[in-house]
Amino acid sequence: MTRANGSSGEGGVPFVHPEPARALYIHLPFCRARCAFCDFPVVAGKTEHLHGPYVDALLRELELLFSYFPPDPSHPLRTLYVGGGTPSFLARAEWERLAAGIERVLPGGIASLEEWTVELNPEDADPELLRMLRAFGVTRVSIGVQSFDDALLAALGRVHDAARAVHAVELAADLGFPHVSVDLMYGLPSQTVSAWLRDVERALELPVDHVSAYALGVEPGTRLFGELRRGRIALPEDDAVAEMYERFVERAAARGFRRYEVSNFARPGGESRHNLAYWRYEPYYAVGLGAHGFLRGIRTANTRHLQTYLRRLVPGPRADLPWAEVRALSRAEAMGEFAFLGFRLAEGVDLARFRRLFGVSFFDVFALTFDRLFAAGILTVDGGRAYVRERWVYVQNSFLSEFLLA
Image 1 (cartoon, one colour):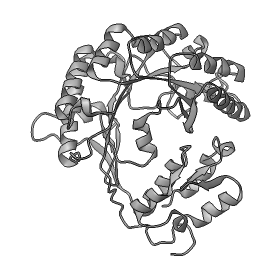
Image 2: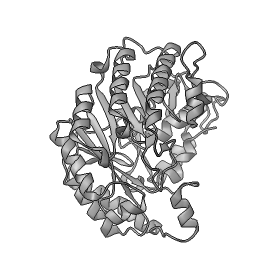
Image 3: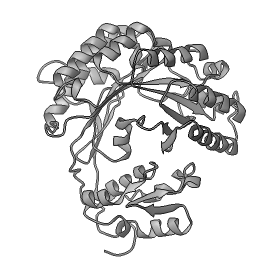
Image 4: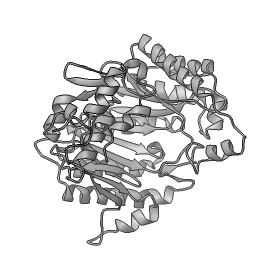
């Protein structure tokens, strides 16, 4: 083995992930309206007539997926994450059918899960819905607050206001959800550092044990992208956005929230176990419109077109998985992904697990890149893990892409 990146002749060798999938993602795409920044696979508007057929198709897909990739009975699924879209927009009757279907198909049933997260929009938070979700076995709600500034919420195309967001968080805590998370966004149009810090303080004083903070990304095809190109909005300067992140890290730490991933902060025990599976390079099932899965070293992406999705999952023997993309990873690609994702975590890259998965030392594979970044004071090693030093976390994407071996 020579001391050079990707010199092991692994480029075309397929990678078969030996670990069982213990996480399941379910996508519910329906929204009242598309947010100005959204480029996710969603179906907006008057969609109630589609909820029933979609749940039927979703459960058929789950059964098909489990038939092709059976869960390991000795390693039951640990986490379920229902995202969107707006899962809380789903009709109550369809929620009941969905929960019953999950209970029927899931080995060990819902009670065997360690964590079940549902994304929730503040405008949907009412006692009836939340009590129903809690009765189903949901242990964690992730509330899409984004901001407590009503003007910024309007600019983002959000339906709720700040008061409604606060009410949703407090209601979820009052009704006994063990874990409550909020999403915030920074780098928003015309947002100042001081305005962002007001959002931060408001979030941290609420009864939550997890906060996600995402820098706004303006994607082509979104409403914000068009407004930015036409000069109708202005975004903060890069230095201001970097300061927003740094100040958030400081404020969160002072309130007992530890950064465990670049954009995710939690009190002890409040980490998202489901999302940790992604960053730790564990396999996971995924069903629903546009959902991305990772099983046995194969990455899949479902169609983003609703009618295609429904046609592929018609009742009977003609039903088929709605994959639009299927990609079998090479060992080189898998090693690069393992490193890239692991470095996003505060815990870093688990060097012993890398060797178990790939049968080779991390340092033999990535010698040149690691040595250079180590010498620059960007990466370090301690306790069997390699990780990014704190001062480089915010800009890590500018150099971590070097680990993605083709």
